[in-house]
Image (cartoon, rainbow, N blue to C red):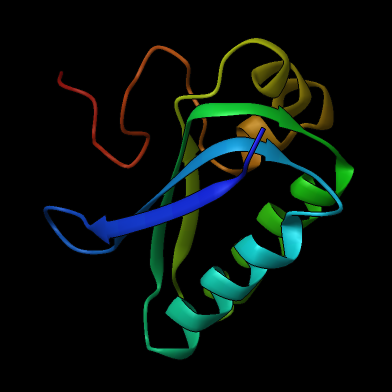
Length: 115
């Protein structure tokens, strides 16, 4: 399966990156390059949509951590959304679900809950 990264501006600021396919040792450099390009261009708020991501290994997890560390150093954030199945399980087991604000019940983890 091919890996793709697309991104667009988010309502309210920031960028939404949509990942599809398998994120692993062979495809992680592509995501790193996109994240680096956005951060180097001044972006500090990144929402990564994992809805169409079918696989993520430790290399992919490292990309999320690295990206989060880079934006956090400048007061920004990186959040993930849309993971399911094996990808969600990897986020839960590694503890990144909590660190990266992932909640399976909420489509946008950056949105404030009503109440």
